[in-house]
Each structure stands twice: as structure tokens, then as C-alpha cells.
Image 1 (cartoon, rainbow, N blue to C red):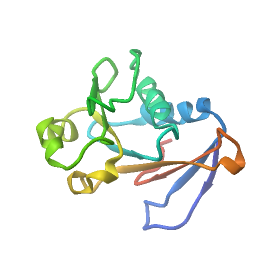
Image 2: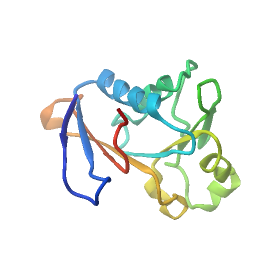
Image 3: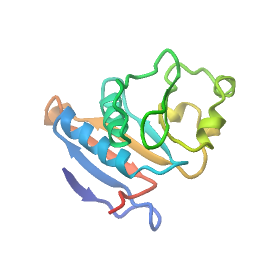
Image 4: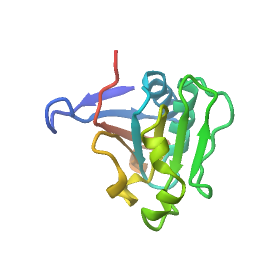
Length: 160
């Protein structure tokens, strides 16, 4: 599934790109990231509505060993999953109007705790994001097919 590694960006932060031809590909890439995730990591997941962020997150959760159903926390802002090898804190910030709402839900306990955070729509409150995060962008190109996605990752490479 991996198709290219681009050389732009500073040393150690060159973007990686994958092509996904199906929801199963997107799930599998998420699962690979979940298997390699470490405590304290924050993954910022961006892309248009319906692009596959929840599918990626479901794979990520499975990679952590979470077997319960994983859904987008659009109306609750935060879903917590404690049954995997690490706690997963899944944020969906689509309905956040400003950073003060994040204070109300105690985001710092999650960001700086012992689990891993996956944050959808992180670009809506950049002022609260730590400097060291992994940015994942999922984009579709309908000219290539309905399920075609380009997944770009910056901030880390998958560990061997």
C-alpha cells in the first residue's frame, strides 16, 4: 500500500504517503499505526467529512487491542477506550467553537497522560496542540475512484 516517501520537510520529518483503494486498506494502515503507538503520543487526524477518519480510527483501536465498537465522538467530543494495551482517547473537535471547551472536558489529562490520543479536526484549535504531534491527512480524489484515498503522515515514520 505504501507508494512514496517525499523528500520535503526538515530531517526526520519528511512526509510519508500511502494510497488506499478501500476502507479495508485505510483500516489496515490505522491498525499498523495502533500496533506501534506509544504512551504519550498524539495523532492529529484531518480530512473532509466522510473521507475515512473513523475507519482509520477503528483500525488504530484494533491495533491497540481494543475490541469494543469504536465510533466517532462527534456529539460527545471525547470517547475513552481503556481495554487495549494503552488507553485510547479519541477526540472529535468538529463541533468545538473555541479552545475553552477543551479545558472543560479536561483534555490535558489525556494529552499528557499514559494513553495515546487521536484527535480529529485538530486544526480547529491549534493553540492547544503540543509541538510534537503526528499529523495524518486523508484526502480523496474522486477522479481516481470512489474509494481512492491519499494518506499523508508527517511528524514520524512507522517504526520497523
